[in-house]
Image (tube, rainbow, N blue to C red; front, side, top):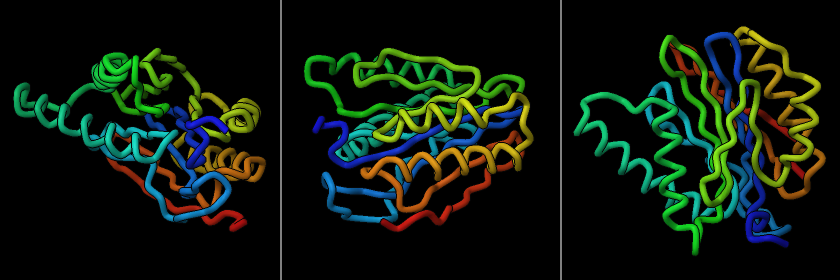
Length: 204
């Protein structure tokens, strides 16, 4: 078992029409033993920018604290929120800095940029970015997430349809991975609001 699979995780971000959704499972495990069923993998950086961290849970929490600190410094200095593209560059640089002893995390960044254009991106543990125009996935359930998202994704979805699509993709994928699951946590972000929903899934 790889260190990335130690706690188990499933993360997906998907774009819609001037909106995006980011979703994760809620299981925290130690290999095959479940420790918690309400684990928070997705964090809010600001109202239009969210960060999901899959991989080793302890590293994810450390990395989140460091990124939040960097973002607060940026807000103080620049007197504005960071754009998603800028934040992705920050995450990438911070991970690459530690390339010889990396954080065992695979981040997923989702945000609304200029003119409410959705931006999604993922990267590996040393900060190599992968940009996408439709969806990005991460975690132990990533293979089944790719398949589900590939078959369910449509362009220019409205927020409600996007929520339905990302939820179905997540729930059907975690059923095929024994290291993730136990419900889901979904954020749908539009220029005017953030909707957070908890999904009930199979509890086994």
